Image (cartoon, rainbow, N blue to C red):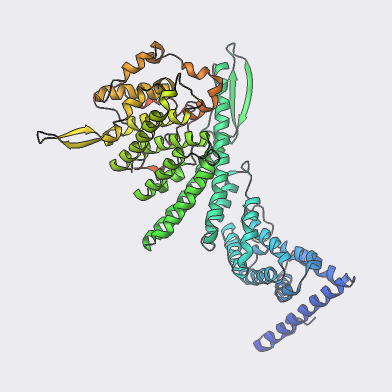
Length: 580
């Protein structure tokens, strides 16, 4: 093979001509080797494969490597399944660590290979997707991780543009390569960053990739809550536990101590790292949505921001709403719906429709219960909702309750906690909203004497009758919410709830009595749901700034020192164990 080194340095034309001949010779050599391989003559073919598997160490070897890749780029469209070993060798090259020229040539090769034969599309995509993972301990060159990822994205953009149908294979590969939830924080963050970056040149994948990302966030969120609940269950058996979550170590040890001082059990948890993963991943999604909305707003492109809302609401209904132990994931919806009052109302309309649904297949009772609890928590906590929107939701809840009582009360004997669980969830949601947003439930009314006075909105009118109905909701709903609702309504002279509570016996009025209805095993599932407050205070420090100014914290009524947020014992049941 003619060597470029033998050509005089000053003769550029001669150098170029020599390189052209060398490229043609190498291309022909590869083509002939592939043909011979199909005939059972593998010597030249195996030589090429081995050459490609050997890492170039010197400048001369690296130049020859350039030549091989350029020649392969020419040959790529003619390769078939019988050349898979050769293709595998090329795809195994650590190409992102070389110079820009080789990276460019290699990208051209990938595009030609992907368009040349359908069988090679998946291997090409999988190799590129693996390049989006966190890379460590590179033996060759010192190219930065950022530069490597930039080259992978450039190649992906090129391959996707040459094969529009590649997306059909692409999303499943992206999903399968998603780091397991147990992998380190950096691995999770880097991959999510790259998925969201990919949307800049593949916006048609936005729905699918956001769905995959949020699904992984939910998995981590739920596992954290499960581990925290495991700790809570041990409280009955322990007198002391130690959780040093501010230490620099990843694994955290909780020591359960018997009263005699002996160690009963030692449980190792990596709760801190999992919380960090959750926090960082949620922040990345919020960062993406912030960029997305800001960009669309600058371009007066309301349709694009509305499209993202539709994607998020679909993900919410498919996954978040159906995951009762999700603690933080739902704040992605909370933040984005706060960008526009129309977004918030669209989310509320979705919840209204689910609560009112008569399709048990599409919206079974537990989902309708969850929707009611989400609605109550959202309206109570979303500071960006105006008074009209708050009253609109209360109007929906009150009207639904009024109709429910009207249709069913005559057949109601004793409260049936299971059969009427949606009803009780809606009552509880209404009381919860009242406790937080009672100021928005008062409107200015011009009285007969011509004086404008503050009065309770008409949307609340049916609610006292609902509370006094044969369903006895005050006996069934969350004890703490009932008691706080009674305190507030009494202080504001809305209605005298204590009178209804006394009809149910002293146990309901007692501040330290246990909830008798909790003992009903048949209602255990619904109990867990009723103690679910989806938008309880947010405790993730990196994502926290996104909620500043839009989240409604508890506010006391002037002159009533008893009305503190401590009444929401369900709000942070596990905060005493771990606060991140």
